[in-house]
Length: 62
Image (cartoon, rainbow, N blue to C red; front, side, top):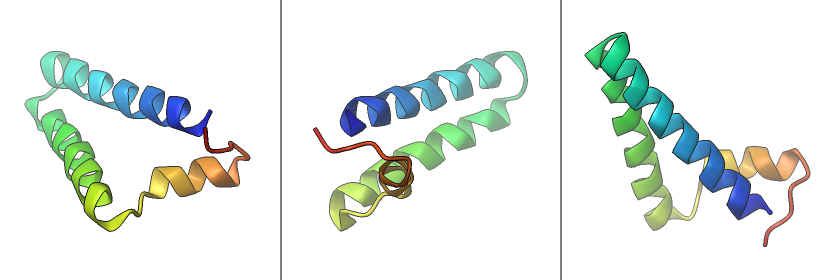
């Protein structure tokens, strides 16, 4: 369940930031970059703040 929610949250953040960049300010693309960098670093370090938050909310690993 946690993996599904993780993907929903990250995907939503990316789509929202792209929409905000298109309709509000191009600076919102930095949020998209931030998400990408965090995904990349978590692949190497095995540490992700969103996973910790989801675990504390009671979501279990798949």
